[in-house]
Length: 390
Image (cartoon, rainbow, N blue to C red; front, side):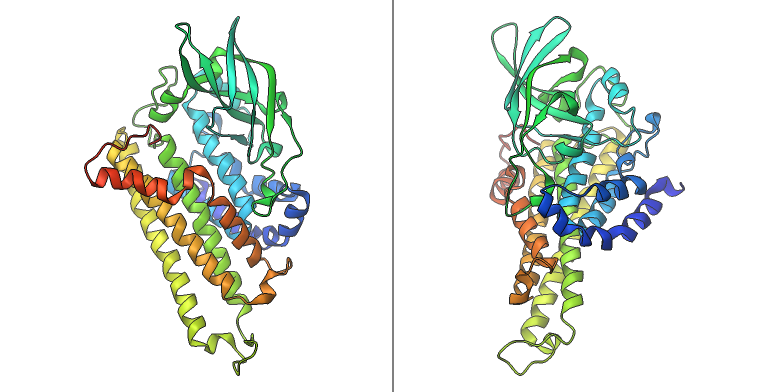
């Protein structure tokens, strides 16, 4: 592949967008994306984009990964969300020790689920730890090879530390408890571990993960890929929402030609002034969110290229801006869905799924608009962000 592989991957993903849309109802029916979707993404090379080059991956820049994720979400929001989780965790695995990386990146299709809510516990044992716990809302767990499990570790002095353990997904049981009105195709079931042994080299403190401080990895410093955990996850979430909004925009434009407006004399919705305003507002919100994304992606890449971390203030601004861009994208989808009329509630009309999924994804705790704007607002006032999640 030339050009770091991104153009070929983008072309491949664009070619499967219609199929991803066609598979939307099946994803909701089975409460998990179809195997065909995973196979199509794998064939396109999507699951190699976050793998370091020394393990045979493409190691794309954050900007290029965001382009790929947006294209996937343009086809299917649930598939886009799952891909975002796998790709972001594919990068996060690079914060682990070199020994752990050598175990995780052996496959040419790296798919990693998991999150950072510490609902498990780690108990010291010879050579490592025993992991126990339940993790809800584990998006993508049904198709993952590895899982990142956040847990509480009791330290020798009797204190407690939040850590993240990398564990093969096969070591977990997965409950059949995902039955939702939104994000239905993500298979975000509860995963459970009972006395699972985790070697010490596969456990990293949350603080080290947040600030890239793991001393046992070679890929620290000016590698061009050390973006900061929360900033990267938020940027990739925003890209997924922007892709969803673009998909909804395209679906709306496909439906309006010669579509009459009930109980009026309009035989073509395009001629109605209200519809004209609605589509313009949606288009402008999508453009605004894209332009905001370009600014933070540029800043993050500049810092990564020089081996510098974003300052706390910059990270807070990124949190606020990514959340705001997500809000704009969500509003664009809502506006287009509302303008689509009563027929859009049919399951055969894809835009209703884009609307429901965007509403559901926006409820994720990390994406809460007011919380993120508060963090940004604090630094704009010259105050401390008062959160480690930067």
